[in-house]
Image 1: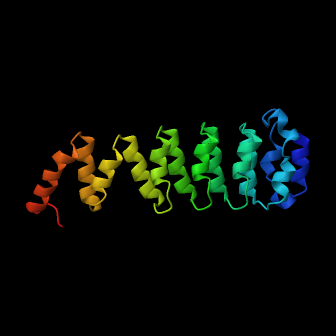
Image 2 (image 1 turned 180 degrees about the horizontal axis):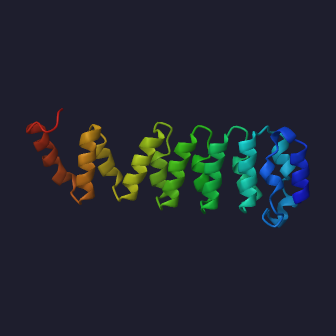
Image 3 (image 1 turned 45 degrees about the vertical axis):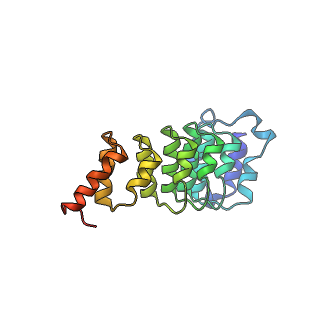
Length: 199
């Protein structure tokens, strides 16, 4: 099996990842049923991958991913940073359903990272789906993810989202200190009335 992979990669000298030849056969872990399923040649032949993409595919196999898991990201349309985020999701125990939320060409590798981290950090499918939208950039996704992780509910996030960043941060800190929307509303009003905040 290992020799077959090296032979195939050797036929693509311009694409060959030199580190592959230094791998010990015992380190390259592929499930027994791999040969009964899709072959490594089938993964490579219909697609043209660059060296970084090939390295991500090989790293998945080396780290014990199944052929089905590698197939999720062994696609020409994913650049290596996206492939890496998908691979890391599987390596960190995410399910296929979770990975499929972000294994989409439309997400950058930074956006994929925020979605992956949400699942890894225990957010629910509903919470992650809320920010796994193309309308959010990776920084916005990170903010929402961190807010969910700190225990802020969607109602509180929607409440402070209507304010500019400086005010938003103050309102978030009030929520994190345990205040309710009913308790914060008069504080906001007072800050506007006293001129501390501009409308």
